[in-house]
Image (cartoon, rainbow, N blue to C red):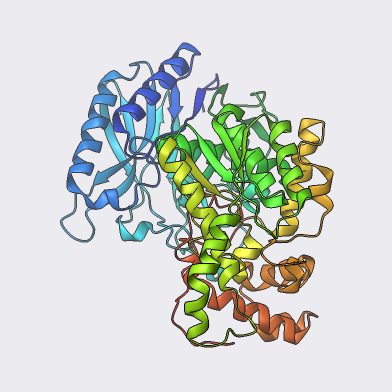
Length: 557
């Protein structure tokens, strides 16, 4: 490299999928600020022009036309003294195969100088890039002020350098190829979603790549929420010994301008998984609401831990004055639960209203009960009228949503959703399932973090300590129907997250009858989950697009 280090800008922005004009404005704003700070090379995230993930928008030719037109307008307006690398969907030059590439546009002197195409296309979990894109070929490094820069896009670096080739997901190694072609620094344009498991592992992997190849590595990541994905940013610059030269903010937009060397700014990140989960949920809820056109939200407040946590997230995401909590007691609701819901609302400063639904419930009992009885006796496991209460609550909340244009948030946790301990068209219905990827035991830990951050008991102590109950029949508790949550969550971790079979989980020390029952409940609840609101992904295996199990199936292993 040259005698003086090149100045580089990591432009961590929050694009909106499909908002081409808005995204161009965001890119122009940040690149002009980067130039003013003396940068010579500006890096922006993967597919930043159109937003990630564009999904089947890419199958609309006009969308691709408009994206390329937006790129041309962008190129003509970025600062002339800056080389800009920005992610874009481009058309393939080849006549064969798929017609699109996931590309990095190299913008210099008012024009797109070249396109570098992504080589490794992730097609697993939430990723489906082989559906849309054709893989690129090995590329040559680009020259920026005499420095040879190797350009990669997100997954191109996700090939563990310490693993044997036979164990890797991909046989190609784009980083090694670029270094072999003379790259003196590797840059990576990414849209890498947040998960709790990826939180520490991604940085260690990137640092390891830099150390293995003995070259600096600059990583710029998208930030923000798009549908069920949350992007944490955390852009970084790593030195050739694996040291962190610079680190961008987590869960907010940031611009890091630093010399290609040590001494760059290092932002403070959440220190615990619980703290990171709060930040991710707030960002995901805020962006989902705003990008879908909602400024307000409402949710049912039962006095339980799940709705309490969801309300805290909503209040921080949208502002307390834009959130309404609704208590909807019936004859089975305890006064303590109503009091806890009210105390929470007052502590948060959100709106609160009690709508007693028992008269509506009685109308169902009177009108529907005789017809059900005429068709035959109820089985011992009958939950018909329990579910009706939940569905009355949904209808009540949707009436408020319709009247006032508020986004309805659902409050179910991952443990209950996993085993179907939830009501289809009842408590599952809404626009966003805020905590649907948090196991129940982790919900308690995150709730405690909320109180710690606030420095007071925003969530009442009684909510944290009471026995969980749906309060849909007399003296009901969750453990009437489910194993203790510590046991349930441990089994779900092995089955859902790690893919273990019944026999493997039993061999790990769990009761065979409980394991068979839990796994059976998970499989038979698939039809419910297929109809649930989108949920914010927090773990490595969430219910939703990354877990595609059949509904009609007979496997029992």
